[in-house]
Image (cartoon, rainbow, N blue to C red):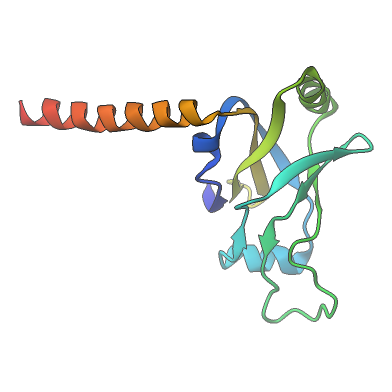
Length: 148
């Protein structure tokens, strides 16, 4: 599994309750561009339209040897999930307070581009501070254990 792009702030800004792996529909030149690690999912989000999931605002640079004249690097890209997963996601969203966020974009062992996304709930400022405190305490605890 080769990670192409990761959303590092996902765990900081959201409490992730469920993770889902989805395929992503890409053109040939986009795949070649991703193989050279020229993609980003920072600031991207997932929306549901007409019973389908779409990845919006993700950036994939134009492949250098591509002949596409009208290439849009931030176009919407369709996500491939099973009907059961789609029903689970849409039910969580309609339940209230939950959203779908992209966590990482990677190539699977078979060479397919996959997107790891999570059903998450946004954190408040106080929760973010608590996360920072917990992380700092874990670091100090590891240092104490190592020194003793």
